[in-house]
Length: 86
Image: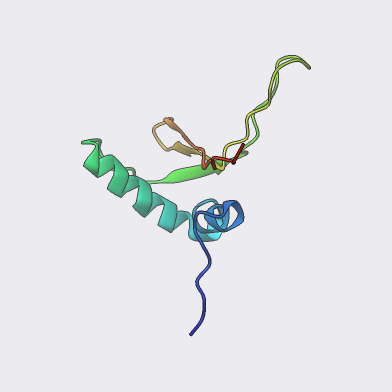
């Protein structure tokens, strides 16, 4: 039997939800989440660059696992994080 890849792994998560080939999977996931929150469903999403620009060298750069935009212009930022041991 084949072992499945762990979707909590950063690389696997991004391949499942953050690639153009799997955009339909992300859209289905978001629509299910939106439905449970009482939000209207999305018809389409546009994957964007996950790196945010810094305004100055002292600013911290944020990197989202997935950054998307709806056709209505709503930004969706998905940050998958891990809690590291001390």
